[in-house]
View (tube, rainbow, N blue to C red):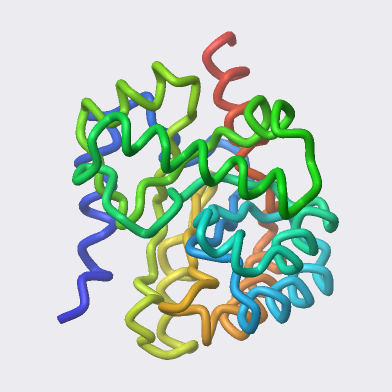
Length: 232
């Protein structure tokens, strides 16, 4: 059974309950964010980069530390092309099943893996790469409290086409196009589950959304827009 139709309802329920998470951007501007989880992957990520480069749109990648260590050359290619990076844990394990010590270690290990693969100073990584998306979107109030205590920023989503079950490119693309509105935060996957279709899906949705007048931005820009809105 596929749960794609339920995700918009889940978003509406959870967003007001956990306002400190980034669920979406400014609904008053035609900006949207395209994000990718579970990478980097040696087969799926590089063709995706070609699509993003073709349309010159920014994106944000939430990485698994273990994959960064396995495929450092792919991670370095993403970094060198200027994409924004976030953390998805070292392994794809639910944060709710980790002790506080295990969770903190998972995030720190991922930051160190990124620093080594991308040849960045670890201190810079700790300061700059601190957006965190929990695997499977599972978290508790304690999880969010710990992330904020450690100076991480929790990032969720508003458009989830459930591409990891491979419903087909046409179905995944149509789900995204149907659900996207101003401020949408879209999540796709370039890892082992769903990554087979990610480049083709991106190649379908990006030109369609650009034609509708949407502007792609990074997660960092969404945070900036949120801060400006709070100050206004």
